Image (cartoon, rainbow, N blue to C red; front, side, top):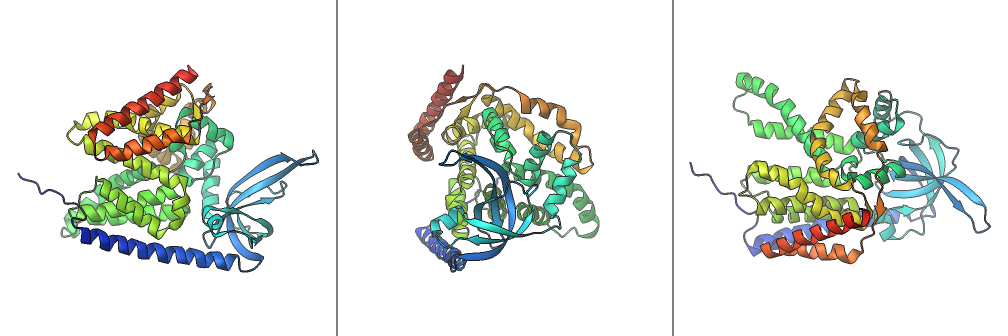
Length: 427
């Protein structure tokens, strides 16, 4: 039986020009709106705002006079969507995810600082007492664990709450920072779970009451609404936003017979997101997320004729090697346990849905023993800072690999050499 070949999204220069004109218009409108909000914020020396505490931690520094000063640093997100840092008294406790009414002084903030996230002095005028849904969920997770570190890990996995710096460093040494920082990988697992849960009840009802309905369209509608609710609940982390947008765009293109696994699709999705949300230009999480998908697509494009089982086995090794230079350039931590992230990433696809199910039924502590070991393994990590030039070389080879198999082999050899260099420095 002959199958229809899927087509490219755009086939003529006119299609590209029209699309890029649309993107430019969207980008101009979105950036103009951000500038309007910036002007409203900086119109006066101070402004009143309702904010949510995204992160709260204590910090100590030595003043010029040699005195030690301790204070609390808060990362806040306003209801208008801008992020900023401020300081508060260290006496204030349990502010994580609290809703605050503050006065902030942001009159001297530049537009670039506004887009990236800025520092401003502020005064807390009111702490809202009513707990948010996220706080209630966090408390529900806390009640299932005696170990506070494990509870914090699960809250990072399920609620995108920040981990303490010591835990972040530990997971970076193990090479699994991408697993504990909720991202498109987690969204993909959730989509798979929802698809499985929706399939059999829907098919039972469909066969009896509405056989004329399309299972693919209805299941996608159901899953996309649930995932959108979860995305909004987590305040739309950039990597999750990218993954959700690709899910929506991917289904629309697939339904219309357009090729999905292509660099064209990834590029257009990326540009559309940047046009709609200009702040993503300055988000490291967004670019790391795009890089991860890029290397998955690159692998699938060149290995489309490979055995599916072989693809499943090789893909984690490939993604690990390709993302290693990014990890070393940003974090710089490496240990002999680092390559085990390949295995841990594969096992995570089983662990994540199981952990969700156990917490839903109130048995979230059943997996605490292996997690306790993972949290306390001595990684003997070393700092191996990687100069940015090495990352630039990898990016250049990666782009060339889209068009040339020779460049692909050079890219693979280059990342293997960097991996051997890291092993040599910690062995």
